[in-house]
Image (tube, rainbow, N blue to C red):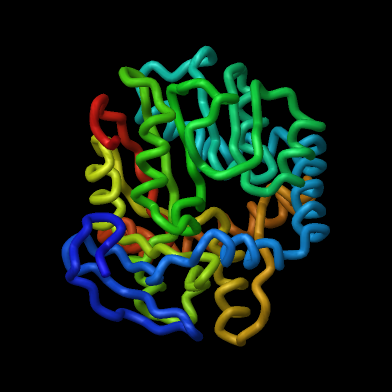
Length: 317
């Protein structure tokens, strides 16, 4: 058995969760479920997710965006859009961008509202793609896996929020992403849960994002950097940060500790009044949480890892 990232055979068991065994690679520090589930097994797993519930969630987020676009765009500016503009020089309204695992399309919709015109998306859930194409007028959003696609040309930027933890082979996915980018202007922005976080170390099996086989890969600062560099990318910035609303994180983490079902959380589905109340409470909470957050960011130990990197032409193939 070899590491999917660095091909090392220095693997050892780090955790057993239910019937799933997670191995750690001592060379690159990737933690991963082995062996990889087969394609048929994964399709069966995801087909077991209630499609009506998933479709309703997507529909609710789109409805909320249409009603409260200014609040959602404000939130997305802080966590996604402003960093793109900061770390990717030359990004402008004419730049082409593909959001892989685009969910309900809200991020693309926000970019469109801000004047970006060449927007594409790939989403595994065909119901979500149907709703996106009914409600928004992007260049192209297609259903399927993350790979080079005749319907989507090479683009300047690829974003992948909460995607790489789901794929059977993250290295192969990064190779596909590398091939989807323009050579001279190709950039990636990736976010994954941080398995090197303080809370992952504290909660272990009960960590909120420890959910095999939905999450197959568990990244640390070291393993995410290694994944990018091994597949033809130059890292511009790699940082940890908190995942949106901290209060919501603690609410879901508490449910996980109590062995309750974890419902999906998205701020995009909030009404205008809920946005106001939650932002107010969150602002007060940040005052008390600030010392822990500062230490967590200093040691890459907050809940999410964010990678900004540039394509190196000729590598990653």
